[in-house]
Length: 134
Image (cartoon, rainbow, N blue to C red):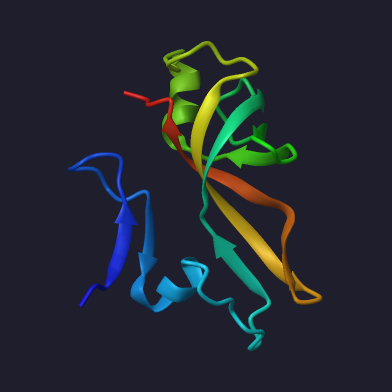
């Protein structure tokens, strides 16, 4: 039987996102988690965004992103490769507004009145998928 499904950048790379088989229905949107005492959850969506405001330092700081058709949001950049590329001045493009990016977020959410809501400072960029860093 299938134990998990993963998404990879390439053939030999580590998966950037994994869904274990016990979460297939929930992660696929077939059903939602019932309130069984769970008050907090962490999700890891992959999003296409436009960079609005980067932090031009090599430490984890808040960056601003804008997905198409959705409001802007802030997330702390925690991708070690990106932070190292900034320090080494080897980011594939000049850091500026308007760069199209694919990112994997980690979003901490709490259950409020039956709806999941992101907690304050609960978004982090765990991986920049594109532009690719060599």
